[in-house]
Image (tube, rainbow, N blue to C red):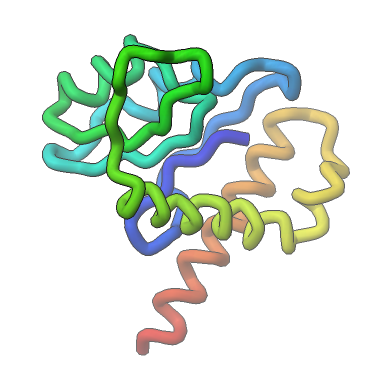
Length: 131
């Protein structure tokens, strides 16, 4: 499961891949149509030059820590990167739904539908408490 999350920690895009697939191939889908001036926070799995170029071509700023083997002096804001916990907390909120955590559905489309339903519930909680 790959998520694109907005600043308040709620999912706006969900993609599925096979369990043994690297994170980087899903980056092209997740990083399409970014709002100008956005700060993109991602983990080391998304550390690739083509991903950084994809982000910068959309006038956005990547905050991706470099992998251990990279020595070319890539810089990122550690202060801003600490906000990535919103992404991890979104995953944890989704996994509170037992159907998603245990993956009862073996069909990927059914599983994706359950993730979208759970995401909708997360969004509704925000608007429900705001009223």
